[in-house]
Length: 635
Image (cartoon, rainbow, N blue to C red; front, side, top):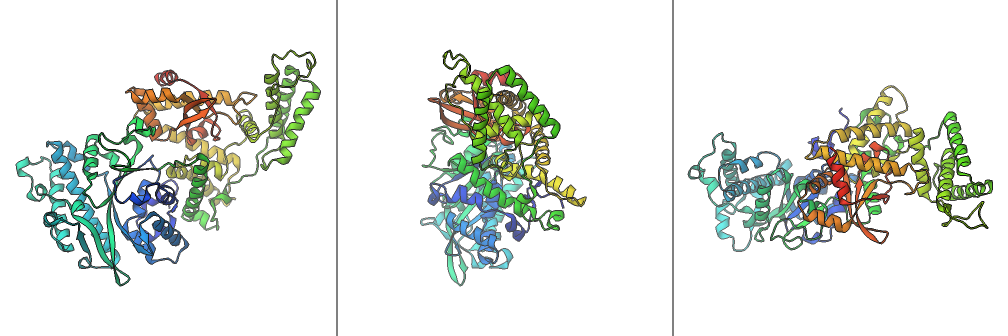
């Protein structure tokens, strides 16, 4: 079987029970159940926005009615019980009964072709909207009658008050007539878009010309559930609407924002369909002129607004759960009874070879002499390191790390005493700021050891999760590279667990491959931009005194300058937009430090892996907007 980590298993598994066995409820919990306007998510049009692979299609598939019904009717598995609990928290079910009948309509097929037809925009929008509505009705009936649980004549479409005329144009009141009308509309509209020569307006089939608005006419659907009537809120989920022409999407979104519509409607889309200002989550960045967020529509960004440490913890939980589920599909590992992904990622602290240790000691001896620090002061610095090591929880504090921490403090001592003229402490002055050791100093030591001696730095499940930038597909790609090596070892009858060095090698190779495969707009300029950022961060991170602690992986632009940039129409704003939309960088707005507010442009996890940078957040280099332009122009 193909490595499921390298193919989106949730995309190619067609059997519902197999899909439910591996899908995780965490995205629904994080982005829907905890949404501040959750009670309105079925009343307003909702844009669900995320980067490629953030889980939009998985979420859309999970909340289709046939899957909700399968989950509610089969509570024998722990996974189904957890999914049922989350669906209830999101409002899709209540008291073990469904409340919403949702269907997913993929938009990546022929819908954009309609925008090329030789008609007025209003006509083209009407045709696409009719096709979407007809297919939604047909998919609803397929979902409601799946597995022969009920017949079509057991489904009742309930119109909204005052929808008499609209009821006639959707086929009447009974389900069979409504389905027949939907089929005729779908055939008529599809024939227009599929024709080699589109008909003139006068020759458009009558079924496509007549009014057809089931979204406005139908308010609820009634079925029987456990012997009693059950009313459901109908819902359409338009997946991948970013594939539409921008003007086409604007017209469709305005049509779906009409308040008369009773269907719940979610639009799943990528960030690159938004403006640079919207991608950067700028205040007042509304979808379209005249439409206001939280008044006319709601947004679900597939990135949390919580504290970033909470964000990482939540994703670690989701990714660990997902990895364990996918691992069950890898036969060579399943046959050897490996059920926890974490168990295959060795986390024993790496160490330098004897030759490398001698080289490290020689380096420190040379620098001790050149820095001219007294033996007494060196002894005090060693005591500072020893006190930290005794109280630290980390196991990765071997002699090599302790020596490099000692080296960092030696250089910090020199920096903090340079220029002091006190005669009393001329030979051994006290530093202006006392020397202390924190975990960031230990991290800096490990990072420097990685670059000087290739000592493994990026390894372990937490590192894998953090390098994925809270993106499920990125996680699966990186994890898939590890699983490939595990499978190879297992087939050769070796222990499939990977050492830290093997993990880092696989992750770095895969990350470089991912960066080379970028094919989005401005990809070449994005590569040039991040290469300049990464090289600058590497230079600072390698400083012997570790001036930025664990190192840098971001640049900071003054917030006011970034606001001005986004308000204009420069190309660099578009370059940054696509860099964020395709996970080359992450933007953090209004980051306060040094009495100033910054917009941080943080290099993504795969970029940090490829260049050997820290994944710790907060270390950044101060830059200005002109620096961005200069870096981008070097392509």
